[in-house]
Amino acid sequence: MSATKEILERLAGDSLPDWHLVESALRRKTLMPGECLFLVGIVHPVVYFVEAGVIKMVYETYDGDAWVKAFAEEGGFFASLAALAPEGSTSFSALAACPASVEVVPYKILQQLGDRHPLWQRTLRQAFEIYGFRKEARERDLLTLSAEERYMRFINDNPSIVERVTEKDIAGYVRITPVALSRIKARIKRRQAGSGLHGGEP
Amino acid sequence: MSATKEILERLAGDSLPDWHLVESALRRKTLMPGECLFLVGIVHPVVYFVEAGVIKMVYETYDGDAWVKAFAEEGGFFASLAALAPEGSTSFSALAACPASVEVVPYKILQQLGDRHPLWQRTLRQAFEIYGFRKEARERDLLTLSAEERYMRFINDNPSIVERVTEKDIAGYVRITPVALSRIKARIKRRQAGSGLHGGEP
DNA sequence: GGTCAGCGTTAACCCAGGTTAATGCGTGGT
DNA sequence: ACCACGCATTAACCTGGGTTAACGCTGACC
Image (cartoon, rainbow over all chains, first blue to last red; front, side, top):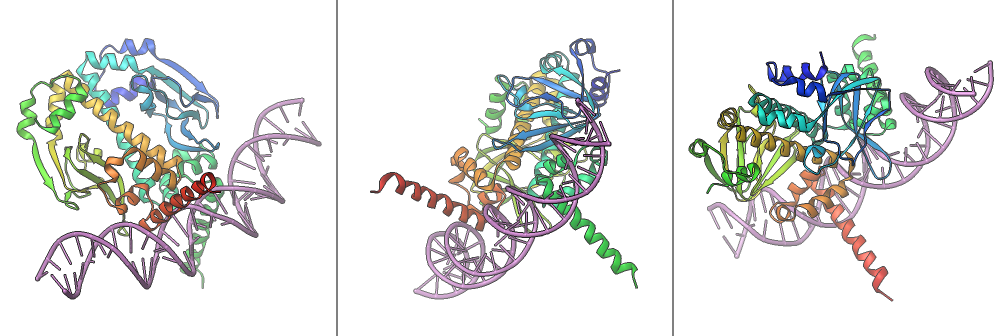
């Protein structure tokens, strides 16, 4: 069974009609770390479903550095919303952060199924709801947390991602440089050692 | 005609069936600057449509300061996605940033219409699409732009909002303190004066 | 086994923005 | 007319993270 089917039917809470239309349009893709799924600025109206591994979505700035917008791991899905709009193009790039395998579905197929079946339309709406919900949380973190708090929250909430990506990528997600991340980790460790002394040593 | 109808039918590109169900559930609300629409952490599954004025959505941190998540002006709509989910509650507060008037619609009504009419379901999906799209842009700005760049982009892209809200609110949106915003504005002005000298003086 | 490249860490220096505080300016209340 | 309050600005000082550079480690490729 495809990862896509599992993910969407879990969302729908039911089996989805006309599934064969998705099945026949679906393509599977395997990626080595660093391999590119798509680059920013291209016409690319498709939705990805992650079967295994971790995908990172990155914004590249004019001066060459790349900030990690989000990670997606198995069971997750993503797309550049900008690229799904008519005439739109991708607003970020997507790369494998570790060996990964994804399934690709043209958005047009999903739209057509949505126009044909209420259950599909509802499922698509829910998918956007979830997507918006995640963005909302990310936005809140970027607005209200310090770099150190963002780091702590990320490693606590996403241990399964942390163990598979580089420090550099984590830094990119926390929106600091790898150097600063190293410092923050050292700071935390130092503090923990310090508090240990308070409680335990004579 | 209600602002809500105008906004939704522009989205749908057509007139929406069973409109009277919305009409009878819809409430209008007028607000003075600083007046509160809803606070964070309450059960509040409704969608707002802005008829006039500017609403600011803010995240308040434990230590008392408030960062502006977004502004909505006439023709716009918003909701706390977290509060629309079953059992959910608002993840931010909303206040009038200037005299404003909004319309409130229970999300349940919209959901029911969505389940009944494909056109409604499609319109709701589009609304979430737009909402997600805006979040995506905001996230990109926070990740890739400097404070000064965020300020410049904001005043260029939203002149109609800028003229109606305080510097404090703008600073909250740019994610800096009012003091820092003052400095940035002075810096920009100084640079402009400087470049004027280059070109014009003997 | 040797070399090379990329990653993570640490140190030194720099700077943008946070913090605090003082000043001046509307605006509303009495 | 007065006062009080909140907003915007400016100055002085502090700090967290950016930048650059050096070092060690590991893993890929000859």
